[in-house]
Image (tube, rainbow, N blue to C red; front, side):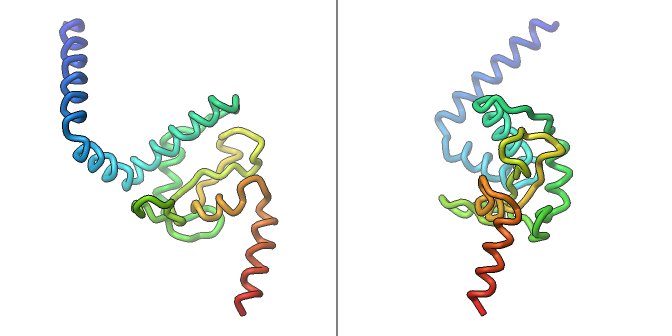
Length: 144
């Protein structure tokens, strides 16, 4: 029975590959819809950390559930701005969720990661939260 199930799974996988290769627009649409859900975004973010950790030999103990719990809160852990899960064409959505490492030299671990809006993470990059605050204060002062 198990051999038959394995055969059927393999057969289904081949059928899926054949279908999606002949209908790329459908595959893209399915991915886009999944990406715009909290579960889809959690999967995407987790896969990204796995790739980075493998390349840079960094530790990681994040789980999809851990990320999903924070995404479902709906707001950035630093700014309180709401997450926007929609795709914005070819450019990065500035209010999309992003995983920020508090210490950029440490791994993706639950005590080092916070879920933030992408624009905050982009501003922070390899700097500190205080550096971003200083920049923000200067921008605010200049806009008065």
